[in-house]
Amino acid sequence: MPQANRTFYLYLGLHSLLIGMFPFYLPVFLWQQGIGLAGIALVVALAGLGFNLGLWSWDRLRLLLTLNQIFSATSLLLIALLFAVREFNSGFVGIVLLAACYGIYNSFFWTTQRAMFIEVTDPVRSGRAYGNFQLFVFALLQAGILIGGWLLERDSFDVLLVACTSVALLGTALLVASKPVYPAGLQKLRSLSIADITGFRDANCSRTMFMADGFFLFLESFFWVISLFLLTRESFATLGIVVIVLAAIFGGLFFLLKNTIDRLGARRIFTLAVMLYCGSWLLRAFTSGSMHLLLMFTLLVLITFATSFFRLALNKRFYDLARQTEHPHRYLVLKSYYSQLAITVCFGLLAMLAIAYPEPQALLRSIYCVAALVSPLFLLYGAHRYRRE
Image 1 (spheres, rainbow, N blue to C red):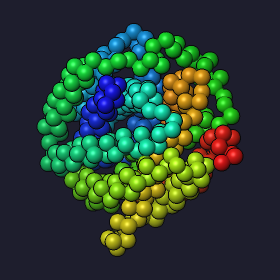
Image 2 (image 1 turned 30 degrees about the vertical axis):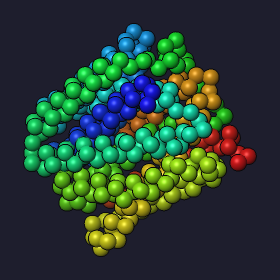
Image 3 (image 1 turned 135 degrees about the vertical axis):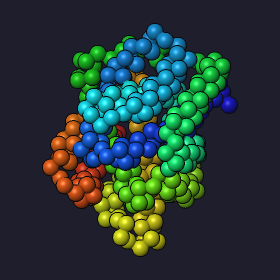
Image 4 (image 1 turned 45 degrees about the vertical axis):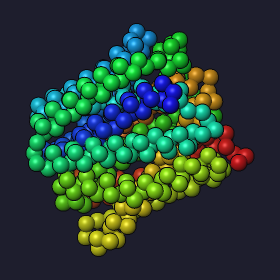
């Protein structure tokens, strides 16, 4: 395996494990601390703002720092997040500090990861490559989820903090020792200005997709995780086991999908993926703990399948279209700016709505129904480019 690929997988593997150990549980941890949907939506909105501030810094620091220094900064930001959680209080200052740490960590991790990924793949095998690293992420993420759920169930956050910190420091030391090469596409590319960001337009409806994707990503990673937590009777360990079982069942199907998606018509695959994704939000709206256990588990499997298939198809299209631009890395950064702006606005509005909505589960069902109506917007993405397929 080439050096760049080894470094990419080590970096991705390290943070997939760490994200599973705690950031995955952040929404339900806040829920158990008595922070309702309004407070959690506010955390997400402020995290979106923190992400964009972090991204603005990352886009300038990358010209001054080595890749090793960026790796080290990313791990230190995760450790800062853990300490912010440990000292968390439900006041506004506590929420702002937590959200800032979470958003800035995400900006450094995801932007660096995307920059490295686009350097180690080619468009002919992008679906398979994305599938390979998704399976790799799945394995380490599930390991982290198992460890984190077990420790949180035993109220051992301090032990979890020590474990995460140790893994982060050890993994970063291994990354530094691997002597990574800075992505060539980033070495001479100037930082984006506000005019570059606000003036961005293309024929692929990229801005629409960027903004929609930010909203949906946090519906999946925060609100849907809370729904699963409620379905598992608010048990960290049970939630972790359910997520791992769902991932294991889907893993076999995903292995087949990743090897076929590059050979099938991009337009057909993407349309099917969006329609299934739309259906998954309707299933979320009608899944409840009062269902027969077998029926509920079947619906959860279908939701997991539809969501993962959509993510595979969307990311293949995203990276393929990025490579067709003059500056692929600039396209990746623009995506983050617009996604996080939408997160700040949409979840800020949801926070205000949740204050006036007395029943959280009813509100979640309503949000999922709205998501099902909005999700066909993804069909606009790249439609101009793939119209003849």
